Image (tube, rainbow, N blue to C red; front, side, top):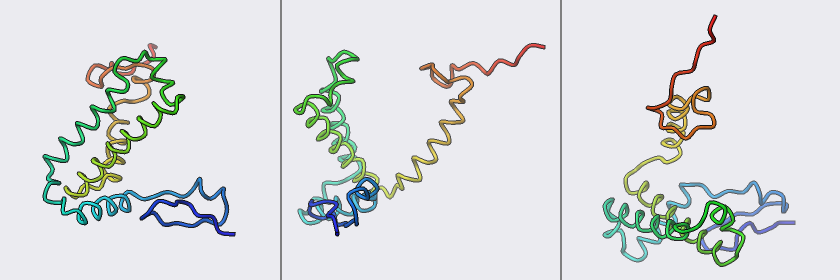
Length: 149
């Protein structure tokens, strides 16, 4: 039996069991291609300059921020409980991702490689020995204490 992984236009994929759906993923390149095609079909590439895309990205981050702005920490942790607020969060997060993917496509940035490199860099800047359990900027972290003899 074949199960359809997605009914969304432009997203094609089949799996052989429902369990495989959990493993099925859309690649960054595939999403970028869909967004690029969307822009080309509407002749919007002329508007998708790096400046415009960064401004649109910042606007969408602002809309996501607005959802959380006056929530308490506990309320923000529960924002996905109510269907209406969960839907708004998903939509704004998708908008943020769409503009980030479009910007990386226009600038030729390999997001997967950039993120992998950044994770390694952060591991060096924030070693477990000094950063665990603290929200301190790396420049203010003390060096690990050597045991006294």
